[in-house]
Length: 142
Image (cartoon, rainbow, N blue to C red; front, side, top):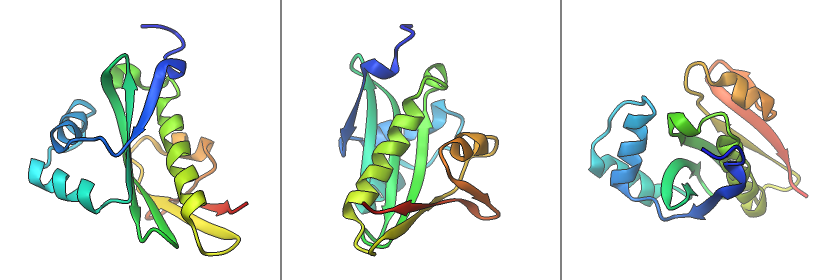
């Protein structure tokens, strides 16, 4: 695999299919969920982003919330062979940028989420606080 994978990954909004959502969860070691649950989750979310590398879906992330004041990162999932190559960071930054662009709370907004066990350092490195119920980050709206 090319060393500069990140430079060859394209992020595409709202193309994720429920079957691929379930497959990524399983391949990355998350619990399997029914396809119908995945479909409903994708329909009700604010934004989902797919990471595509040479035509292959290698990662995903979802942003849920009310679309104005409260934002939550969900299922930031990268296939194991593509982890630690910057793709997760790309996805999280993309979702944060969306929240910042669409926040109507004034000067600040908060993005929360739940980190998979052992992935807390990834979020800490990105400026999130690790709290008892997950992660959070105060974002300044420019």
